[in-house]
Every structure is written in C-alpha cells, then in structure tokens.
Image 1 (cartoon, rainbow, N blue to C red):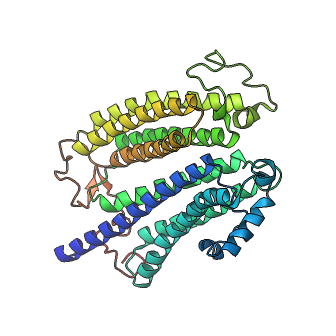
Image 2 (cartoon, rainbow, N blue to C red):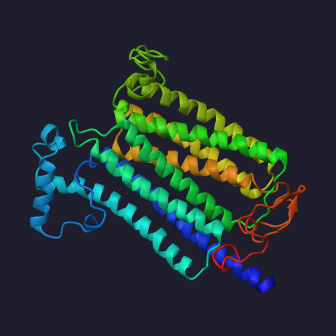
Image 3 (cartoon, helix red, strand yellow):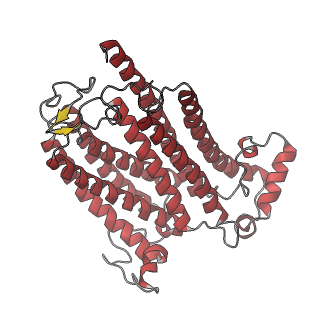
Length: 393
C-alpha cells in the first residue's frame, strides 16, 4: 500500500470511529433519560408500542385526549394517579416519549450511514459485521423496553425487576460494544499479544464483569424499589448484616425479590467495587507507564469514589430524582472508564508514549512478541483498505 493509500485508510477509520463515538454518547444520554423516566414514574404513560406512528408526538388536542384516555384505562392511573389531569399527564408523557424517541434516533444514526457505506463499499468485513451486531442489539433493546413496560400494564403498575435489569444490561452492552469498536478504529497503535498481556486483559475483563454485576444489582434495587427503605448507611435497621436476608423460598429468590437482600447485596457489591477499582487502576499504571493510562486510571479512581458517595447520598435522601439520575450516570461512566483501561491494556507499554515510540496517531503493522498484530485492519489482511470490495479488500 502506498503512503497515500494508507493515509486515506487511516482517515476513514478515524471518521467511522468518531461516528461510533458520537453514537455511544447518544446511548449514554438515552440511558440517563430512561433513568429519569423511571424515577419520575413516567415509564407507563404510553400504553402502546408503535415504532413508526409513535415517532410523532400528539399534534392536536384531540390526539392528546385519545392518548390520555388510553392511559386512564391502565392500572397505574386507576391505582396511583386517578386524580391526574391532562396537564399533569403531559409532564410524565414527555419523559417516556423522549426516551423512546432517542432510541429511534440512535437506530437511524446507525442504520442510515451504515447502509450508505455498505452501498458504496466503504466498509470491510470486520467493521460491517460489528456495526450490524450493534444494530441487532439496538433492535433487541427496543423489544426489551416494550417487554418491560408491558409487565406494568397488566395488574400492578410496576414493571418486572427482571425485565428492567435485562433492559439496562442490554443498554450497557450496546454502550460498551460501541465504545470498543470506536476505540479500535481511533487508536492506531500496535496490539501486544504476549501471554502476560493476555492474562492481564482477562483480569481486566473480570473487573468489568464486577462493575456490570453492580449495575445489574442496582437495576434490581430500582425494580423492587428497595432503595425506599433502610435509608441509613452503613447499618440497615441498626445492623451491619440485617436480619431477614434469606426468609423467602426457594433461597435464590431472595437475591431478586427480597427487598432486604436486594439492597444488601447492592451495598456489598458497591464496597467490593470501591476497593477493587483503585487496586486495578494502580496495577495498570505500574504496568503501562504512559500518560494516557495514568490519566485514565486516576479518572477511574475519582469516578468510583464519587459514585460511592453518590450512592450513599441517594440512599439516605430517599432516592430523589436528581441524585438517583447522577448515581445511574456515574455507574455507566464507571463501566465505560473501566472498559477503556482494559482496552488500553491491549497496547504496548513503557515510556511516556509507549515502547513503539509514538502517541497512537500512527499504526505499526507486523509481529509483536512473535505473534500477529490483531488491529482491525490486519484481521482482514495487512494494509487492506476499508474501501475495498466490502469483504476485506
């Protein structure tokens, strides 16, 4: 490949990476809006699922009356909000509508450019397969969102905590996968494949899994509304380990339906994460003596400390909307930063700019430690341009 061709390929990769990074930011915002929707109890305000027609908001007073009439037939209106006026209904409607609209926007932001680039054969197999996977995940997320809402429209005006957890964790997977592919395309440094680095990466993914477990347990707290009780820290009902942890049968159901156990396990996971993350960050700083890793690791320590404090403040203040939203946003940010540190661990370490002697702007193809570099461009052949025949050149 000539230097001109290589430069053009690098620029295309960076543009695609920037596009995916912007998409990840939209996913993050969508999850935050979803959290506010739940905290304001707005999630059951739209009682049907119409992916196409539902894109348009009510444009007339008659349409508002129709939507409000449908809501008045729901369990939430009859059991909780039976005195609600149309004006009050509009305030909860807009949160749920915005949340759904963001999902549709993200779908279009991914689907339309992807279709255009496929048509023009600007994508290789590595990139196109991963973007197609992201689009499929986003479709699953939309289905899970409605599946969750439907659980609160039958008997009780409360969505299933299991479906809520599935909805949040799928959104987390979309965020993580989008960021990972974007970082691969934006960061052109060589990937190190030594056994030590592989083991380090596995440990890193273990820490990511721990953070995901904490997010999942937080979803269970939200779904069961377990945060509305035991609003003291570190004690619960005056005890460090509360009574009634395993009073339901079978035993496993306590971890998902017993409000005492659900909150206690979230506290325990939060403490474990609060101690694990600083140790993980310090180890990565020592192993990768670079400015980028140092900044990421220190940021990770700062975020986990802020998240722990936010969790306590949210609990003792009985889960106000502002603090609850910040706490959920902090959890997602903690996940993203942890994943970023793991991603950076794939690259060569040493020196202020790494052993390869640059800051990531260029790419060195070839062999590292006797094994082939697995940069996305090299998975389909060294130097294959993204604008080949759509199958990797």
